[in-house]
Length: 256
Length: 323
Image 1 (cartoon, rainbow over the protein chains, first blue to last red):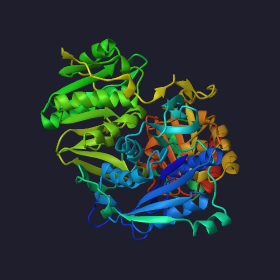
Image 2 (cartoon, rainbow over the protein chains, first blue to last red; image 1 turned 90 degrees about the horizontal axis):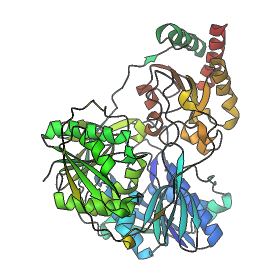
Image 3 (cartoon, rainbow over the protein chains, first blue to last red; image 1 turned 180 degrees about the vertical axis):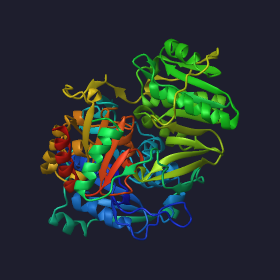
């Protein structure tokens, strides 16, 4: 099975977020970057499928030069080769625009399975995998926790709301968006890191891909969110704050 | 063009609660644009849903009926709605931001050359649509370029369902053309993951733990606090994903929705998926080292500090207060 995993590099969790001077995006200068969490689960699912059924795992990622480090990480974990769609203006593209870039780069590969994480930890659109399926003409299912290969194609476990699940059968080729938590993530081994340096990493300039129309949806402005409640922050040492909180809960909120 | 359409979703044979919130959002949008709101229901048999929908303040109910629309499939819903929207060209389509909508609406929008503005929490003049970014640490304002239908899905709990005036909506049936060969996925019947032994929904006190706890070995720290309070222990998704606590203790969109008297969030940053499951709590307390963590946006009381110092101190203070 030839599996393509679309991965995204996102700001590291808990990285300080500062709005840039134009008010359109965050200042990226001081940021540390990491592999998007649910994409790590998509990669893990792909690697496990390859271990069971053979084939090839190809990772693809779009973004500027820095994305190379996240691609190397995926190669170190066991992906066979990688495609880097070089683009410095991802922020100007909407979800459809980014998916078009990826779809154009994926098409010539004719994969059996396309996996993405459920959603990115930065923009959080949760759409790339579903739009990719549409652009590639593939059947899809989303929020997948488990993938089983069958004679007819795939049987997948889909997460529904409030603790419910559903099994879905679909033919190959197909596209799936992977929910976090379905597998245990692996770490890159020293050997893996060494090997990654010699694996194929093909670069495609975004300008070489036919992506058509301008953005239909634009992010006009970002801001700090408005507070829904006024939070009383209790100051002092841990002990003082804890004592003050218990007082508040007893006599002000009256919940103790 | 034909105004604002809102797509309703079925749950246990009735129109689901998030669907009514989507109607509320559509009505708010209608006030800004001066357009009429049309409710869309789709299923093999839409009779009961249409009857419910027509009793709300919508001017029209559109019933899309086809045997292949029950059970839900992405292919079936995408085909049926695309045909309706191409025929009627609505200016806006509003959905509830449910797992089902997330499964098909992005593909439907893409098929029509559009992009879904998903998980919207507010509508500003313009209109601009507000949604969260960076796991709730920022909010962003989105605008559609205005060519063709604008697709929007609204977050659960963000729009208040008002007791709407009853008016008699007109009803219209739309018959889409769908062939069985176009439905590529075969859905099975929904099932519960595991026997539910913990009912967080009825617990008056909940102590909930997140990534800040760092490792499973540190869990007794919060367990002690929960015991002192007589609270149930709950967790955010990453804790259950790691297998540190069973999934039945997970609070959030993929776990349980709770509204206890006291919800004490320890080391939880407050991603939107978690907040939707607990923001209705009577009193929310957050303990987090990051003063910018979005959990503080919904908290009544907060302690900014190292949970490994604050939690033991709080456990002692609670014990002392109960003596």
